[in-house]
View (tube, rainbow, N blue to C red):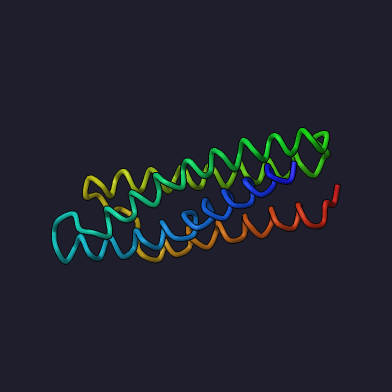
Length: 136
């Protein structure tokens, strides 16, 4: 079980990196695209980061489900799972923006992307609180 926890934490860390970095990278990619009027290196980096971390997110979810089963799916595990699924939806929305950006379509403002980026921070704080405090 210790190895599963280690893999879970490692994959969560990698996935969180992308959750926090990709919306911010979209801001800079949007600026780069406006300056170059073409697809530049920031776009490639953003796509690669998103794609790589998607696999980490899947592994984190699978190992998390396995660990939840080991704890008998206590009520706090269900709350954590609900919060993780909300964060996964946020990540999916980010992927939608990345796909549009790949086509050169940047519809979100810098301000929207900054706020969107910060929403994930609150989600992660809530998940950490549930895992550490186990209120249920």
